[in-house]
Amino acid sequence: RKEVVAYLLEEAPGVSAEPVLVKALGDLPEIYAAVETAALEMPSGESTRFLSLALDHRDPGVRQGAVRVLHRIGDANAAELILTVYERDIEADGVRTATRLALRDLRNHLQMTQIVSDAKSNPQKHARARALVLLGAIGGADAENVLLSALGDQDVYLRGTAVMAMAKL
Image (cartoon, one colour):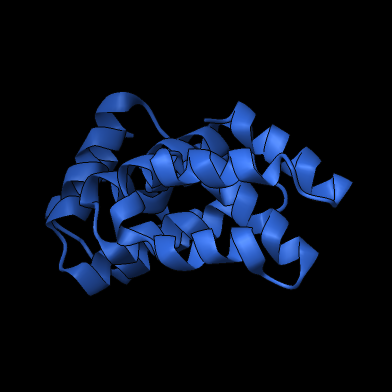
């Protein structure tokens, strides 16, 4: 497999090689490392498209590998893609853990003002809960203050959500 990936990266890069290269993001560490290096060297738009394919792959190892590469890229586009993965209702534990770690490191690329505002005062209860959960994943002083404040909310659902989010800090 390592030889096939090396060949595709050097001799036959392109759309036809993508399925194999995407799958390699969930492979052995040395194979993953070769594809990670290639993805980091791709032009921004190309790497975003490639990693978006990997984020939708059925194998959680591939999705986790894509999140790790996006974490290394570390820009606003990467943070937004990672956020879309985090917001999925159902996701494998390893992928969810990788997204939390990445979001904590990339929080300066997220719309923190909007997230905090939604957590404090969005008129829709589920939007507030979503923002509270996200603050638990992102962490930081602002997140802690908002979550502590939400513990006193009149709505039991929001109080419970704040408790669960605080457990992730």
